Image (tube, rainbow, N blue to C red):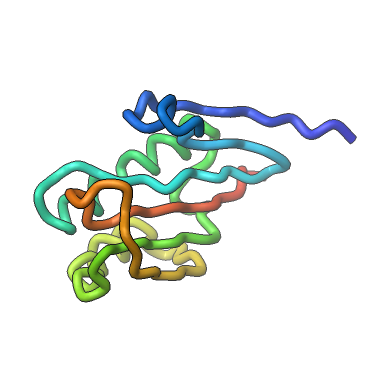
Length: 122
């Protein structure tokens, strides 16, 4: 069996510097790289990151409804609760399995990074 792999770049600043793609489609799965958003607050960055992720999923042929796993990474776990309503609205009736990790991010201006794995629609 030959596995077809499709690599989608978004033009993000770090993609070429580090050597990764925004999303990789392989074997019926869409793996979206850790994504940060723009804005001065954790809420603005969360909403922005989710929009970037949604765009990547759409380009890959999937959607937020097909996300099965999400990882949230924040330098300050206390800020996570401020994102809950945004995340609930984004995933709606299709909540994925989720993990939240408190950790340092690539730049101190970032307050949240989100990584998802989705399936391709059947």
